[in-house]
Image 1 (cartoon, protein in one colour):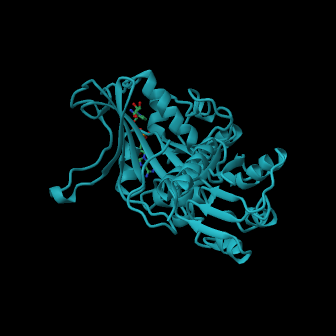
Image 2 (cartoon, helix red, strand yellow):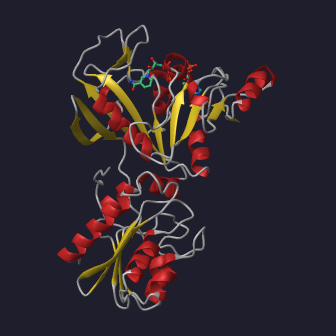
Length: 383
Ligand SMILES: NC(=O)c1ccc[n+]([C@@H]2O[C@H](COP(=O)([O-])OP(=O)(O)OC[C@H]3O[C@@H](n4cnc5c(N)ncnc54)[C@H](OP(=O)(O)O)[C@@H]3O)[C@@H](O)[C@H]2O)c1
């Protein structure tokens, strides 16, 4: 159905899309390549929200170089948009430019708009095909797909552990178990996320900043703290800089003074109690979805990790394993109870395993994710 040349151009469009890995949020990362008579005449990728989408950049690129766009083929990694958002519809721009053929990697995952951009193009007489390298395109925007189809972010839980699965000594000392290379790699995963989530135990123990530092990025993810009783000290590093979002339990008069001190530090406090008076974690994901969080990066201790896992709030584990042993009294990754029967164990699939410096990086997933409008098996990872 697709030629070798089509694959080459779509691979290039995907490579362009990856250049927006840290910047397009909350919009998807999209790339576009324009080809006419076998020659690449324009390229582009999505700019930060409110600025040009990939197709517009590619059209401008081609025009700036004096190319005739009529009859050209546009390779786009996501269906061109059909609605007026912060920018006009890209489908219209392609029609106005008299593009002859559009090849898209995948449909827009939003069920409300999915297929409309492609239909607009077809109605204008443009030849349209969809599904080329769909797995790769969906991997690139796994969080956007999750938010559009489930209303909640893709949740990636990062853990750094010894080979015997321990994350810190009984004393609480945990810095550092993995190598500098693994920690820098961890920052790249932070950088692509819309938000970084941690728990009050980690803040108490480590006083982390939860910012991206080892990677050059113009955008810092939203920091999110789960703190039922608003115990975070107002001088905690996680509160420095841009406002941190704090989810707590019941926000009554007992917490009023603490809440006020934290608001003075710029924090936004959202009470979201569950029946136990802690934070309702599934509901928290819905709230973050409403706030346009695509990928949620979790870096918490074993207690919050365990709660998130028990409540079905995790899509994949990003585990760095160091070649060392800390012993059975040291902290585990998750405070999960053992199942009664082996068949009830939590099962995952290894998605990728790579060596990073002296350590191993394992990406493991709970459930397959599907691409709207494309026929595929398990997607492959890209980063
Ligand atoms: N190696 C790594 O990758 C890594 C990453 C981060 C942190 N750490 C280490 O983890 C240690 C801290 O562990 P930790 O387990 O105390 O920290 P944590 O998981 O970050 O935070 C624990 C807190 O989360 C609360 N929590 C759990 N579920 C909740 C829910 N549904 N709603 C509200 N609160 C909830 C717990 O309350 P309850 O006790 O009431 O359940 C507890 O107070 C530190 O030593 C840190 O260095 C390691």
